[in-house]
Image (tube, rainbow, N blue to C red):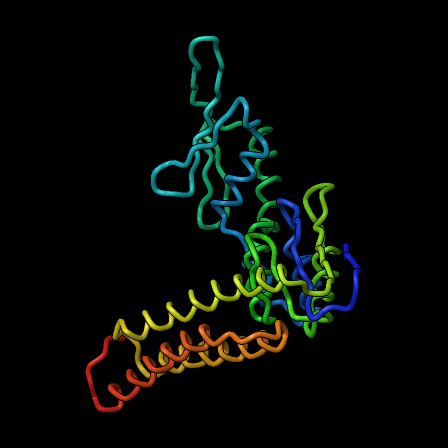
Length: 280
C-alpha cells in the first residue's frame, strides 16, 4: 500500500489500480479474515469465462471472438488483413453447456485442450473492474464519498478499517505479474479540498435522496419497502451530520433534500395505514 504521509488528517483520499484478473479464492480467503467477504465479487458465469479464455488463446489482432445466437457459444473468426480489404474466415465454433462441458466444432484435441485449461482458470478469476464495484460499495458503507471518478475521500475514523482492506487486496493473487495497488493520501484539508469533498457529497446525497423520493412516489412500495427507504434516508442524514463536523461547515441544503424524501415516506406510510391501494 502506498501512502502520502503528509500530516494527521480528518480524512484520507483513496484510489486504487487493480490487475485485470484476480484469483477469487485468494481474495475470498483474505477478505474473510477481516470480515469483509460480502464485498468479494460473485463467481463468474461460464459464458464470460469461456469468452475470456478464447480471447486469451486467439490473438486479438488476427482473430475475433463473436457470440452466437442463443448464448453459450462463440464463433472464432480468422482475419487476414490486406491492403484494400480484409478477409474473414470462419475457423470454429466453441460452446459450453450447463454442465460446464466445452466443445469445439470442428474438433481439434490440441486446441480444445488448451481452451479448456484456460476456461477452468478463468472460472476461478474475477475481473478487477468487478472488484472495483465492490470496493466502491465498501467505501460508501464506511462513510466515504466520491470526489471524482476513481478518487474517493474517506473519514479519518475509518482509516484503520480501510488499511485492513488495502492489505488484503494487495496480497491477493492475480493472473499476471501486475499486482493490485491501493493508495491513500493523508492531508490537511485546505479550501479547495473542502470544496471538492463537499461537491462530491452533494452529488451523492442529491442523487440518493432523489432516488428515494422517486421510489416512494411511484406508489409501488409496501411496508417493507418504505422501511428500507426510511433506513436509507436516516443513513444519509447521519452522513451529512458527520461531514458537517469533518468539513466544519453547514450542509443545510442537503439536509433539506433528505427531509423532502422523509416527508414523502411519511405521507406514503399514512396512506398505506389508511388502506390506500398499493402495488407490490
